[in-house]
Length: 199
Image 1 (cartoon, rainbow, N blue to C red):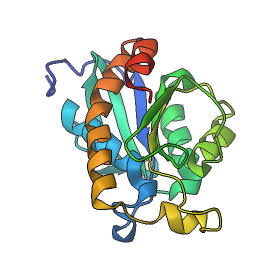
Image 2 (cartoon, rainbow, N blue to C red):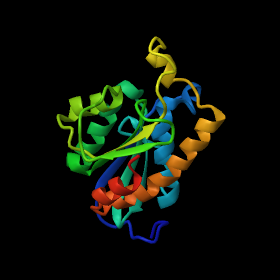
Image 3 (cartoon, rainbow, N blue to C red):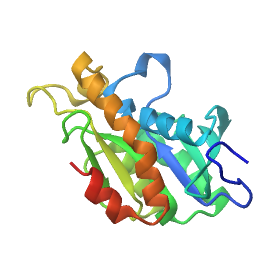
Image 4 (cartoon, rainbow, N blue to C red):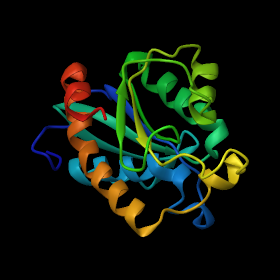
């Protein structure tokens, strides 16, 4: 039995990926919101994300009775699809059973938006996943990190900046919701998750 009260017997059924950049210099930046979301899910289901495999740090857990691989790609954001595609191929996971957590500058800090599928929306990590898997029909959780303070602000500088104290508090509130969102989606209740958590 794994923490969470579910048996981990059987094959990996889902892959949950949190997107971000590895390395201490990127810790707690806006672009790493997906890493923090996955950490919250991992803590909730008892997964230990520290094994290096598939160009990612990975761990296993049970969510909604389904054995899952939780992964934080170690490739840097723009090549996130390399890690995701390797793991999907190894476990023969269809695209519909990939759940991705990532940052979104079009939403205020701490706001959430769940989607069943969709375009990359200008996010390079999602763009690479869609490009390398050839599909965009995977559920995803967008974590608002706030818009650039003014149009001329360099986007890379913005997403690699850190949150203010107030923003950080809003983000932590959002991350705490991610385990429940994962349980609903993996239980086939994506509509319920969208109705309850979409901002």
